[in-house]
Length: 323
Image (cartoon, rainbow, N blue to C red):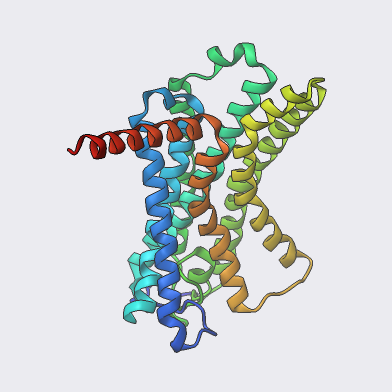
């Protein structure tokens, strides 16, 4: 019978095991730039939508929730790995590691449910446009997004408490850039480890695949409606209203599906490549999404261009008047 106590007090974040120490500084610089892009881009979206009353509509409120999720995920994961490569600080305490694990999986689940809310918004806007003002209001979006934040919470608590109940007496090395469930529970002893991993897999599949099924149904329905539009200009205009949402959803799901399918068919990656792929599909969307919001969403793009023109005219007037 397993002894129920923890022998590990700290974990060691390994990062990329094959990375030469001579590349630690460039790696930390790249990670810092990614974090800076996540901070600047997502804070800009939040402030811009809050400041611009004309953008306080259901679609853009969902964007704000997505930006907050991306901002939180980058803040939870990146500072520690940057600290490792910049300052040589690889140690993370037992409970700090579990806290990071909780937020990594919780925020990923929240993002999945928010993408479902975004798909529902586009489905109603395009498939039943006359009902859209009644069915989708700011209050309804707040309620749906609030549900997306709340629903994964009890599920993540199950994962955390089950993992905490395991005895940890193996290696304390986390072969990853941040603490996640697999990396932590692989250090556990006893037969209960497999049970914990199976329960976590079932919860992960629920949080990722259930929203994905509804997202696919929504966008397939949207595409069918678009194809039925006889006017090519009308098709293009309708498609433009859901292009950003499709891009954001693909950035989140496609890399994950690729990695899962590759593992399923027996295609193995080296440890460094696997960690890089996980970093890319976890952090690339957080850095790229604000660009999609600004340049693929016509209303945000036009409002931003208008603000830039007004600011430019103001600067030119000041220069011309000598003030």
